Length: 129
Image 1 (spheres, rainbow, N blue to C red):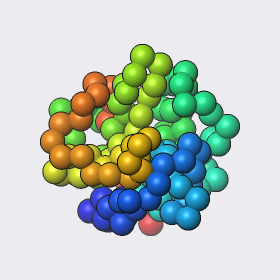
Image 2 (image 1 turned 90 degrees about the vertical axis):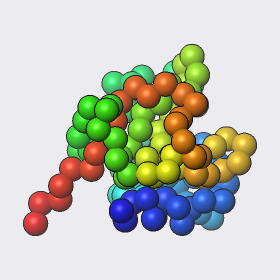
Image 3 (image 1 turned 45 degrees about the horizontal axis):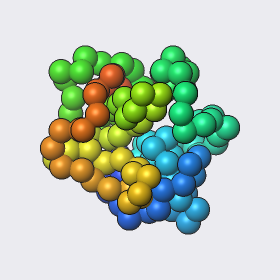
Protein backbone atom coordinates (compact mmCIF):
# COMPACT_ATOMS: atom_id res chain seq x y z
CA UNK A 1 0.00 0.00 0.00
CA UNK A 2 1.26 3.41 -1.02
CA UNK A 3 0.36 5.13 2.28
CA UNK A 4 2.34 2.56 4.29
CA UNK A 5 5.39 3.04 2.06
CA UNK A 6 5.14 6.83 2.42
CA UNK A 7 4.87 6.46 6.19
CA UNK A 8 7.86 4.10 6.25
CA UNK A 9 9.87 6.64 4.28
CA UNK A 10 9.43 9.02 7.23
CA UNK A 11 10.84 6.59 9.82
CA UNK A 12 13.56 8.38 11.72
CA UNK A 13 11.98 11.83 11.31
CA UNK A 14 12.07 13.60 14.66
CA UNK A 15 8.88 14.30 16.61
CA UNK A 16 7.59 17.85 16.73
CA UNK A 17 4.13 18.77 17.98
CA UNK A 18 2.15 20.21 15.06
CA UNK A 19 5.09 19.45 12.75
CA UNK A 20 4.28 18.73 9.12
CA UNK A 21 7.60 18.03 7.38
CA UNK A 22 10.69 15.84 7.51
CA UNK A 23 12.85 18.97 7.87
CA UNK A 24 10.99 20.50 10.83
CA UNK A 25 9.68 17.33 12.45
CA UNK A 26 6.34 15.61 12.44
CA UNK A 27 3.58 14.61 14.84
CA UNK A 28 0.96 11.89 14.48
CA UNK A 29 -1.43 14.03 12.44
CA UNK A 30 1.43 15.23 10.24
CA UNK A 31 2.38 11.61 9.64
CA UNK A 32 -1.15 10.73 8.51
CA UNK A 33 -1.32 13.76 6.21
CA UNK A 34 2.06 12.94 4.64
CA UNK A 35 1.35 9.23 4.28
CA UNK A 36 -1.88 9.87 2.40
CA UNK A 37 -0.57 12.79 0.34
CA UNK A 38 -2.97 15.27 1.93
CA UNK A 39 -2.10 18.99 2.12
CA UNK A 40 -0.11 19.87 5.25
CA UNK A 41 -2.44 22.82 5.93
CA UNK A 42 -5.67 20.78 5.91
CA UNK A 43 -5.41 19.78 9.57
CA UNK A 44 -5.85 22.08 12.52
CA UNK A 45 -2.50 23.45 13.72
CA UNK A 46 -3.27 25.07 17.08
CA UNK A 47 -4.03 22.08 19.26
CA UNK A 48 -2.54 20.97 22.56
CA UNK A 49 -0.95 17.59 23.21
CA UNK A 50 -3.68 16.82 25.73
CA UNK A 51 -7.41 17.32 25.82
CA UNK A 52 -8.24 17.19 22.12
CA UNK A 53 -11.80 15.95 21.76
CA UNK A 54 -12.36 12.72 19.86
CA UNK A 55 -15.23 14.35 17.98
CA UNK A 56 -12.83 17.02 16.71
CA UNK A 57 -10.42 14.39 15.37
CA UNK A 58 -13.24 12.46 13.74
CA UNK A 59 -14.60 15.61 12.11
CA UNK A 60 -11.13 16.42 10.78
CA UNK A 61 -10.72 12.95 9.27
CA UNK A 62 -14.24 12.78 7.79
CA UNK A 63 -13.55 14.48 4.43
CA UNK A 64 -10.85 11.95 3.54
CA UNK A 65 -11.57 8.85 5.63
CA UNK A 66 -14.55 6.73 6.58
CA UNK A 67 -14.88 4.91 9.85
CA UNK A 68 -14.83 1.12 9.68
CA UNK A 69 -15.22 -1.69 12.22
CA UNK A 70 -12.21 -2.14 14.50
CA UNK A 71 -12.15 -5.83 13.61
CA UNK A 72 -11.50 -5.07 9.92
CA UNK A 73 -8.09 -3.37 10.18
CA UNK A 74 -5.75 -3.78 7.21
CA UNK A 75 -2.45 -2.18 6.26
CA UNK A 76 -2.98 1.48 5.45
CA UNK A 77 -5.85 2.08 7.86
CA UNK A 78 -5.60 4.98 10.31
CA UNK A 79 -5.83 4.01 13.97
CA UNK A 80 -7.25 6.30 16.65
CA UNK A 81 -5.71 5.30 19.97
CA UNK A 82 -6.14 6.29 23.62
CA UNK A 83 -2.48 6.93 24.54
CA UNK A 84 -3.25 8.42 27.95
CA UNK A 85 -6.03 9.71 30.13
CA UNK A 86 -6.51 12.82 28.01
CA UNK A 87 -4.24 11.91 25.12
CA UNK A 88 -5.44 10.68 21.74
CA UNK A 89 -2.95 9.43 19.18
CA UNK A 90 -3.02 8.44 15.50
CA UNK A 91 -1.09 5.61 13.89
CA UNK A 92 -1.10 3.83 10.56
CA UNK A 93 -1.57 0.06 10.43
CA UNK A 94 1.43 -1.38 8.59
CA UNK A 95 0.54 -5.06 8.36
CA UNK A 96 3.37 -5.91 10.76
CA UNK A 97 2.24 -3.46 13.45
CA UNK A 98 1.84 0.29 13.24
CA UNK A 99 3.79 3.33 12.18
CA UNK A 100 3.43 6.36 14.42
CA UNK A 101 5.17 9.52 15.61
CA UNK A 102 6.70 8.71 18.99
CA UNK A 103 7.48 11.62 21.32
CA UNK A 104 10.93 10.25 22.24
CA UNK A 105 12.00 8.41 19.09
CA UNK A 106 10.28 10.24 16.24
CA UNK A 107 8.54 8.26 13.52
CA UNK A 108 8.89 4.53 14.20
CA UNK A 109 7.30 1.26 13.16
CA UNK A 110 6.17 -0.69 16.18
CA UNK A 111 5.70 -4.41 15.61
CA UNK A 112 2.62 -6.28 16.83
CA UNK A 113 -0.37 -4.91 18.68
CA UNK A 114 -0.56 -1.32 19.86
CA UNK A 115 0.15 -0.80 23.57
CA UNK A 116 -2.80 1.62 23.70
CA UNK A 117 -6.52 0.89 23.43
CA UNK A 118 -7.88 1.13 19.89
CA UNK A 119 -10.83 3.53 19.79
CA UNK A 120 -11.60 3.64 16.09
CA UNK A 121 -10.30 2.74 12.64
CA UNK A 122 -10.54 4.87 9.50
CA UNK A 123 -10.02 3.91 5.87
CA UNK A 124 -9.22 6.33 3.06
CA UNK A 125 -12.27 7.18 1.02
CA UNK A 126 -12.09 6.16 -2.61
CA UNK A 127 -11.09 9.09 -4.76
CA UNK A 128 -13.58 10.23 -7.37
CA UNK A 129 -12.28 9.99 -10.90
